[in-house]
Length: 552
Image (tube, rainbow, N blue to C red; front, side, top):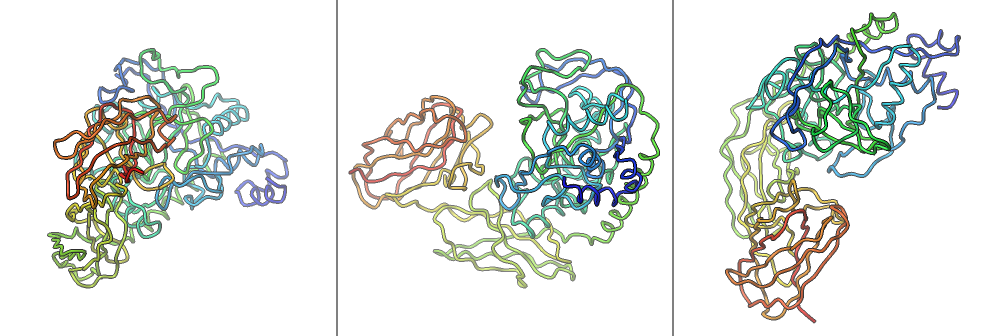
């Protein structure tokens, strides 16, 4: 940081003048909560990475009541001139957006210095706690995975510390997560959706559309805030695939030259995850939703004068933010009974008119493929019907929302057009299938920036995709297919009706983000409309598209 910028940053803080006079910036020690000693069953049978479930015995320790804020982090930068990352992955306006310019201080997401600091990486978080420990003489550190899970659970035995919440309604009181209010702002400002992203959308509204000022939601039984969401949290552990060699005392796993560290919790732009879930992140990756909180052995220390002042500032920011949220009007109700009629390229939608006199109109969203993200196609619609001219032959989904006070309500139940017929010779996008089993649709990392088929382990070995094709000319065709895989695989079989056309191997491309176009010659096709079925013979591969072109 340049000298003039440093001087300005210090003078804008409550201790700016004294710090400059003493030529030393004092840290803000965290507001901490004492976590009692105890034993718990760590892990879950829901995922391989959280097994085996095992008992952990923890000594008393303390943990930050809040995630580390921009305000606290600014002292570290001012004191050390640490070179924090200057690029930050934001993933707005369509997700999968490459890293953009921005840092912990200036980015597209933070609007308050009392929000969690983001756009840093694990290495930066570790440098911060090391500096804090050195400056205060107290061994501040990152929590271990075991400490984090024990503190997040806080003696409960449900999916979340506030219960199982099967209807996804209670969470908005406790965590900043993907919800109706966030969806309304996200769609309006960035044309991006939570729906069919990560684990979906919650059926409630909290008044926050981005990272929240810390402590705005109810704490868990230990008095900790934002444990399951707001921002993802770095912890001390080097990431390991399972708990086979986990410490019985909760010590973090370590290894030389560790390249990936464990993360816990989730963030505002994902749905919250069960508190047993684990994540991993490269130590040099800086994201717009990644932050941390601080741990310390033993009881929580007494608050210093600097921390007491910070506490008052946080409370003031919380009060102002709550006042803003209190002014947000209730969202309109869900639009009901959407119907669809289709005549050629014309799609006619209709729905029940809202009986809420404050509803100013409606918006229509279109989903290019099932399980993808809805995009706005029409707004300011005053009538309970809409006509759309289709520009594709494959099935698409529509949904409708009501709008009042510039905020939209929940999506109506989606309704889809009929699956059309893909012209051959030509290209068929993988997601255009009439039916898909054993695979899911996701945004692609390929240069097309569209969608591809994948799954938890890539496309499964017994996956089946059925397509409708219209062959305009009988003859010999060459099959081309765009794939990505870290392994050599058996590939897939291709059927025309009940007749097997060919078997196509999927060769190793180098990884899940290394895409190649591979091919298979001499596929005979008769003229006319047919069902084309792809049957996977192996797992751990992805498919972007198929193409059938006349053989030369």
